Image 1 (cartoon, rainbow, N blue to C red):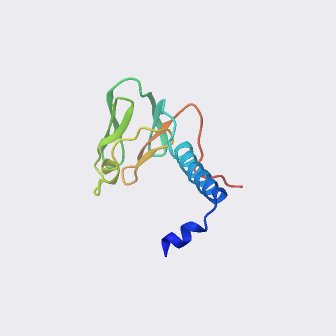
Image 2: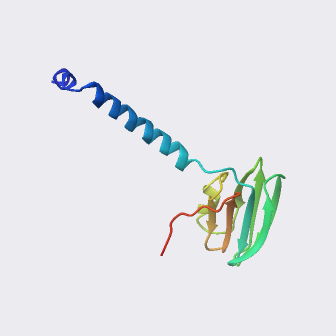
Image 3: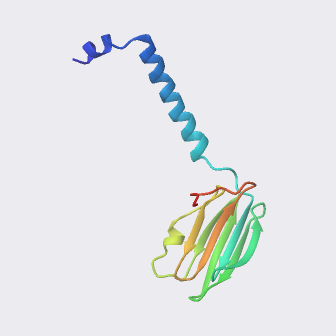
Length: 126
């Protein structure tokens, strides 16, 4: 049965199929790979705590209502290394390295957002 179907595919069909596959791969790599992040914006209690460049390895202690969250910056990557929140979701999120990525520790009201040279949007509202 499959060989019967292959007989009916013409050269133009193969060209269309190949072009479609190329477009899907191109769009995937173009849109799903973020740009390199330049700095991290750290917030505590909904207010800006500090903006730090990713060019220097460091550990930052951020106070929150439950205690202190530790944020680690290594090799242009950021992660929340420890947090007093009960479920540790933000710690388990791991390393962030592309602009637009964010880690939230909601019980302790601490967040880390990576930003690059251009502001990207998740969605647009109007």
